[in-house]
Image (cartoon, rainbow, N blue to C red; front, side, top):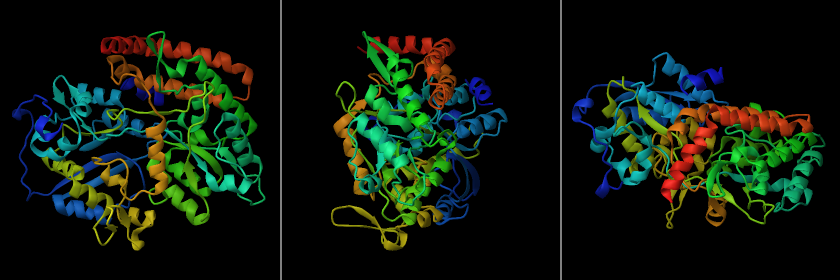
Amino acid sequence: MKKFFALLLCGLLLSLPSFGMTLAEVNLEDDESVHYSFTIMQGKQFDVPEENETLSFLEEKFNADFEFMLVSRGTNDYQNKLNLLIASDDLPDLVQVNDYSILTTMVEMGLLLPLDELVQEYGQEMLAIRPQECWDPFIFDGKLYSLPNQYRTDGIIPVIREDWLDNLGLSVPTTIEEYEEVIRAFTEDDPDGNGKDDTYGISGPNNPITSTFLPAYQYYGVLPDQWLVKDGELTFGSIQPEMLEALKMINRWFREGYIDPQFPLYNREKFEEVLGQGKFGSYASTEVQRLDPAFDIGLAALREREPESHFIAYEPIVSRDGVQRLWTNDFRSIGYTMAISAKCENPVRLMKLLNYAASEEGYLRIRYGEEGVHYTVDETGTFHFTPEWEDINKRTQAGLSIQYSNLFRREWFDRCASQEVWDGVAMFETYGEPISPIFVTTDADIEYNTILTTLRDEAFTKMICSTDETALDQMFEDFCNTWLANGGEEVIRQKNEAYQASL
């Protein structure tokens, strides 16, 4: 089923972006006395109650009903749901798009509204916090069709349970040998002291499935989504000989029992539950701020269960060529975007909502609540949730979470974040290395990305979980040949054309 749908859909204010469309193409009128109803589809961060304080505030402010359709972003759940809505011609009014090829298909099918004049008229807050290069990927034939929700430079960071290290008398690993000893001890030496053999060295969500095993990639100096320069040309990380070696290492960890065998089944929502159970000691996080229990329900549940539990980010494993690196995405990376359906009855009202979320006032109100009630600001400008609202579960019940501020995310890292978060962010400044020497989306990326990602994730999962280590070479060769034959070769060719033109 996943393959079927994959193939089916296979500036600052002084320098505002110029998108070039006419006023006749979209209605810019909005009678604010008229009440409207909108559906909004987003990736699920938390289970937010249908009735909550923040939603009521937004509905009153904008004289509208907002029905949020929240879908897990793991195991391709989100893309599959969106594909079904596209096929049934039942697209929500406002939709988060996580896949550039799907966005392109929606534009080609005429499902999305051109946003140029709407942004120019009602999106000044958005324009003020996103430079031109963030908007460029979403301009098709001279018209803007989606909004750049993200603006960040970060990436995947390794995370480890510090209290388990202390319990076992171990140090934070710096080499791959030390890391292997840690995950062995986390699995076999009863790190939680409950007298049971019920812990694992590694677990993680499957979104993406490849990020969980970051130390192995760090050691071999290659990442599945990385673009490498070899002999003056770009080539893809997933098909490198170093990737095979990394997969063999991960497979050995799996056969030794160090890896939670259920990890391929964990979407983001399920991983929150598993994290809260406290049965594994290391993973890799794609969102550094979620090292803080104040912003992560799984960590909050674990802290309530085990008050001494403590996950931290740690410096990257030294590679076999003596380098420490954390791969970073470019701040212009597409991430996810927000688009408005061509059938939306009143796009102006939605644009006003998005622009409010992008403003300082809106960001603070949606993300943190009311000053003096939900949070305070000290003399240094640091934000603190008030004692009554420190618990993330309570804030989520009131709608005070990143779910609604993701409508248009003004800032990536929360102003109330703990020191663990800022320490993790600082590591990117020290060890950051771009995931690609060029950030460009080619026609082949758009056409083949979904199917190529599916092929890779399925092949890598099978290799990691294989009980026959002698079969890995052939499995990897088969994957590389299949990947190249199903669009990979063309992706590499077009990426190289863009790279050579940029030199």
